Amino acid sequence: MYKEVFDTILDRLYMMPIEAILEIVENIDFDSLAEKAEAGIGNSDLVRLEDILIKCIRYYPFDRSFDVYILVGFGHIDGTALPSRLPFLYLGLERLKDRDIELLIQYEFNHMVRFHANSEFMTGTTLTVGQLVVAEGLATLAPLAMKTETLSEKAIAKSLFMESDEYENLKSNFKEIEKSIIIDFDKELSPRLM
Image (cartoon, rainbow, N blue to C red; front, side):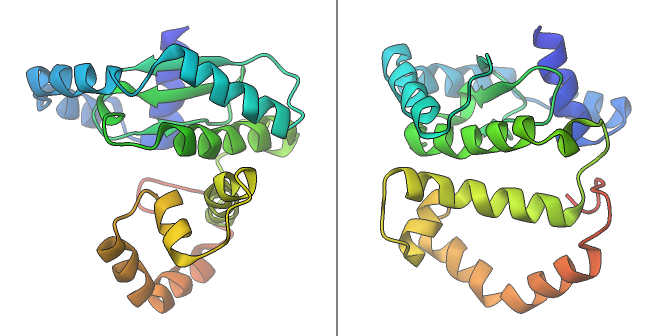
């Protein structure tokens, strides 16, 4: 099953030829990655994760079975839940040390529910830029809705896993980002558009 998880991630998220992926692997500092993964173990208590997942299942009436993978990846992904044959959540163990694990799971659970409840995403076709923008927006708001937290810029920045300076930079480039999204809205995602 790990092969299917990583194949889905490589195909739908990285969108790179195998040669480019091999180059990434060849340049990974595996000792550093292992050290980060060990630090991430402290933030991935299985009882706590199960409690968070139960809250998500209750919030979304999601009655399909799904798998949760806490694996070491390439060091780039906190978590993901992509359109796939079987629903799954992936958490990158090497990225979990300093993450709000509850927020991350709520964010990714929203993706999983949306992608697997809507057959439009399950046809094997690539998402469009517009579909990704909508999916990311909903996933960003999901933890706030689940906690009935007040919608504020600080809460949105936290849900995006951004420091305040990163969020301010995003805001200062809003018009340029919006223009790019509008131009590419109906285009299928590609490595350039990711």
